[in-house]
Image (cartoon, rainbow, N blue to C red):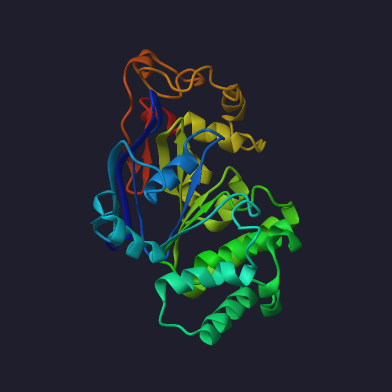
Length: 316
């Protein structure tokens, strides 16, 4: 494949003694959607914020088009931000309640395209509102006058008005009704096709991730445990935790459903002090799993998994 737009190398994030994210590495290519899944508390949002330097990393590198974002000055990072945008989970909390929607969308244009006059800026705002399924006249309204789905459309419009090269979506549909979720997902697909934006899509909704993503990576207790193409992951997941996630939606065609469902009890500690992060819940645990952290190893050219027993499980 081509040189990746985004390369994350061995990123770690700590909050005091707690390791929220440990040794996560992946690439994201132009026009690609990479799904990031895992249960609540697995470190998905923390990783996203670390990538954008909204919170500090304790280890690793984030290379954006070859530039190390962690080493950027404040001025350089500010210049890079027009290409690095995020849509947050809560559509109401992400909008300033005292700011009209039109002003919220115009703000990025004022910062990054100051040469635009007021008339041109207003036209761009109206066009983007219409692009996300609203009307230009709504620019004069405040966030409280909109539904949750409409506010999320506004959040997407604000993020996309600069035509960024990377959009991070941090569970953007989890707080919305199911009927609205599909509309927002389809909007993201359409806008990606139009602008060629790469998307890191964070969710615990496997159906949404399957619909959107080209590749999927699975995070558990801050560690990357499996990554593969969408079709490969959903057809033949290897890691026991990935299998447990897929088994949360019952599927009698998979022989491993019974074993995987046995792993759904909540972990007893934030993270084991040694060994595989999943060994306390894993039905396939062995002595090596308790004593040594597994490395990501290839199942095939585009499928990697961190499991000591991967060679056995790939055929089970």
